[in-house]
Image (cartoon, rainbow, N blue to C red; front, side):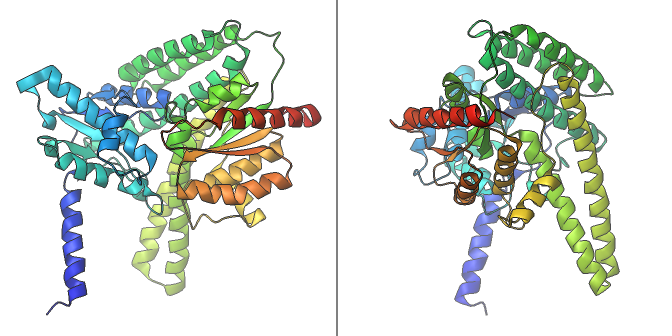
Length: 456
């Protein structure tokens, strides 16, 4: 007979399995993929990739449904969970109003990836599933997820023969999105006319999205890269050469809030208002980290297999090690290609290699990749930027975010030791009266650092 504890565990497993039924890898053929906005540029390029493979895809309006997200949450959830929930609820409500009796939730699929713990991001889609199931009709809306546990495998979403092709185009969209973001942050503080840089980049987003829609499938990715080169060339025309270079500030932190303009109340623009040139951590860095971690774990398992002489385990871990090493090599190669192309015309900041960041952590005995989460990237990135001569570091994150609070507790004293201005900025949807004075004070410190030490 089962004990009470066994009954409880069985009941919990059944409940979790029930929640997970509408979450996973589903064939997207004939469906419309709904993508929540995070990184403004990269999300639109990713939608273009889906369309390039014949899958209807749109980036949903964001932050307009925040009240709906709050209505279905308690406030204890991670803030991006509330924002993205509001985005999908508002979109589906508007579609029902627009289509009336023709509205069919099964025509759509909501795109919400995940990662493992201890970050709560891994539970967003499960929580969203519970909420959608509680609303009449929306229980038929499936949630498509990709997981960091298998390096965001696309198996089951697309025909097998298209998966590798799609993955290459998708990664390119991430890297080009990052490059365009960094191009914007490089030219906007020095624009000849206020608003000119934003107009230029908005036009570039439209153009690049169109090119991804046209050329993602097949062997035409070079046409996308060629168009990027034309955009980067023209970007120099926006810059006023008479404006002297400004203090340079690095942004690290939780990937969604640091990337989502409305959630972080456009912190980068506020920093620019008070005299900064800013470099935000990239989305590509996270993708590379996930692949690097798969290499690291496969290498660890291979060592264990060799010690125990388990042939099957040795073969499995060796296969995974080679597979993910080749993937990581390809990603680095593509990323380096895009940044070097841009650097022929303008000095934007390149990305770190993940192995270098891990070495930074080990050398400083500051943190471990065994723990995981974005703290693995934010802490060593802050160290790297400080040692390169950046004039300040800002850590942006959701209020109560555990990985970012870990980053704060470790990075803050390290920055103090390196005499680099540092600021934590958390967001939960409220408007804090002290936010602007805090950023202004930070920028005063960054400017003093700039006067004494110059810039990177």
